[in-house]
Structures are given as structure tokens and as C-alpha cells.
Image (cartoon, rainbow, N blue to C red; front, side):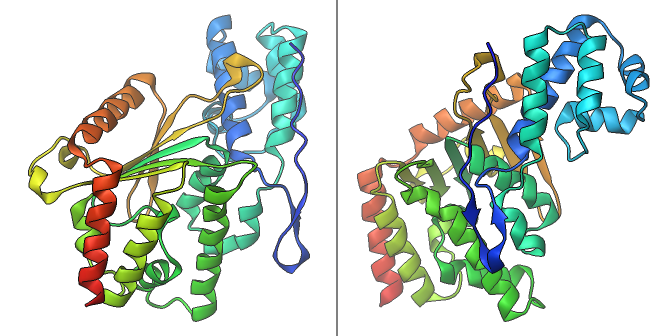
Length: 311
């Protein structure tokens, strides 16, 4: 099947910068997976492959793992020849390489995106569904501006007001997909009740935040569920917070990106894409669903706590 590049409309962003609504993250990962599978299936060693295109071990590793790296089309063509890839496969990979050079809209925000968070933003923008489990803070896509400001000032107390507002603007751009009629993002959020009881920004901010959470949970593409304190111990407590990203099917079936698990800490992030690892988190999600209140009872709890904060 001949690979067809997506035709993405150009958007206008801040300060007249023209960007596309997608970025390099997903096509770069798709290309990496295909290159790695081609090499392994052909029996060619990584050492032979990197010598064939005249690059170092680190560069080939970055190409095969989807890390940021310059993807020279000549390198792709040469590797496909070494791997004895079919002509249509070569065209497909060259198309992915071209698409990976596109600039995502979030790149215009520069330093407003922490370095380790940039990849996640690109993956989230390309995702079809995001499953989030949180034990301390609300998922970013469900936060109000005031909640986000309060957390940003705690995380980065030296940040100036304009810098804080730029981060808030970035989050609002990301949240827009929740109500995008053409490309809605499905979000399934499960959180510990402790998240709702931590007064980020103070009682007034939390009252507004919880009222917003109850409203947004009524969207057809958003599910918000809470694991009550009454549940005592449950499996998720031993696993910790995670985000599971699922991607839309690609016209060429084997190019569809498999799910990825995102784990974040203060200064870095991990992305798990091995089938057995992802399946473990999918099983954890199933366990969490059994421990959580259903959506109507969750909204009842959220609204009760919102009233408590308001008084």
C-alpha cells in the first residue's frame, strides 16, 4: 500500500508563528519502530547498519528508539537498501521521515515546556485516548487556570508572572482538544480521593476546581472516577501514578503506534512501550476501575467536597 502523508492545515499561533497542529514525536517513533524491526528481521547487526550510513552508535540508537535526531532521507534510503526493504516500504519510511520534520504548535512556547515534558506533549497531541491515574494532583487536562497557577508557583517559585501565564496558556491549548468537535480527545481519569482533599491554591481555588471537574466529567469523551478513602488499600497504591496513551489506527495497519505508558518524576520521564510492560499497566487500570466509584457517585462526591470548600 502506498503511504499517504496526512495533509495538516496550517494554524497561526502567537506572534505570527505558523505551525502545524501535529509534531514530530509520533511519526519519529513510528519510523524508529519500523527501522528497528527491518534491521532485526534482516539479520543485520547494529554495528553494520551504523557503518553503512557513517554514523556513531549513539545516532543509530536514537534513530531506532525515536529520540530527537536529524533524520537524513539519504540515511533512510541507504538503511532500507541494506535491509533489502521493498520499494513501497522505503517510500513509507521516507514519508514518515518527512512528517517527523514538521513542527508542533507547542514548540512556539519554548522554555515554557520543561525539556522532559516536550515528548509527552507531542504524544498526547497525537493520542486518541489518554488514561490517567493520579494519587496527588489532578491530571493537567482537567485543571483550572487557578489550580495550574498555584502549582506552577510551588514548582518554580522564581518564575515571573509572564512565564507563569505562558504555561497556563500552553495548558489551555492542550485542554482545547477536550471540546474539539473535529478531533476530540478521550480522557479516562481515575484519582484517589486524596487528590480532591488537598487544597491546592486554597479553599476558593479548590471549590472552583471541583465544580469544574464535575462539569467536565459530564462530557461524552471524558470520564472522571474517584477511588474513595473508604476503599482502604487497593492495587494502584503500590503502582503509583501513570498515564497510558493510545493512538488512532494508521491507514497502514502495521504502522499503528502501540500504547505507551508515561511515568513522570521531578526532573525526568520514562516511556514504557514493551508489550509486557504496557499490559501490566492495562491490568492495573482494570483493577482501578473495580475500586473506583462510578461516574454519577463520583460527581456526587466531588460536588459535596466543592460545597465544603466553599463554606
